[in-house]
Length: 93
Image 1: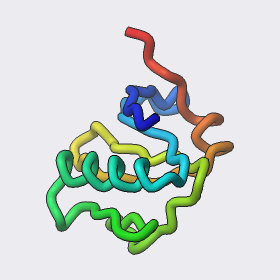
Image 2: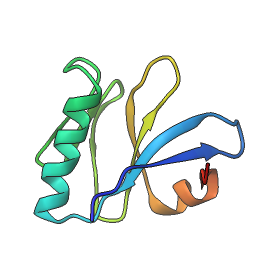
Image 3: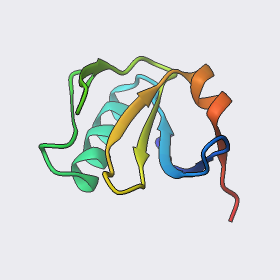
Image 4: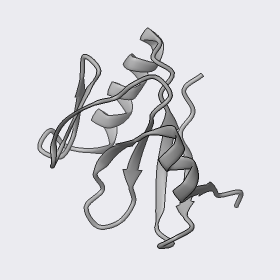
C-alpha cells in the first residue's frame, strides 16, 4: 500500500514526507502521481524506475525510501532502507 507519512531527521531536525517503494506496478503509478502533484518538472520527475533529481538520474529500487524535503527547495531524493532508518523517525503528531 502506498502511504506517504511525515518523518523527522533526528540528526539535523528537518521534516520530510516519505514513502517506502515496494516495486509493484501500483507503487510506480502512485509514486509518479505523488511526485507530479508536489513538484514541477524541473525539480523532480519519476519515469521507468528512475528518479530525476538535481543530482541526476537515480534508480529507485524495491525497499528504497523516496523522500520529499519540506525545507525551502522541496526536492525528492531516494534513500536506501538502512540509511533512511538510521536518519529518520516517524512523526506521531
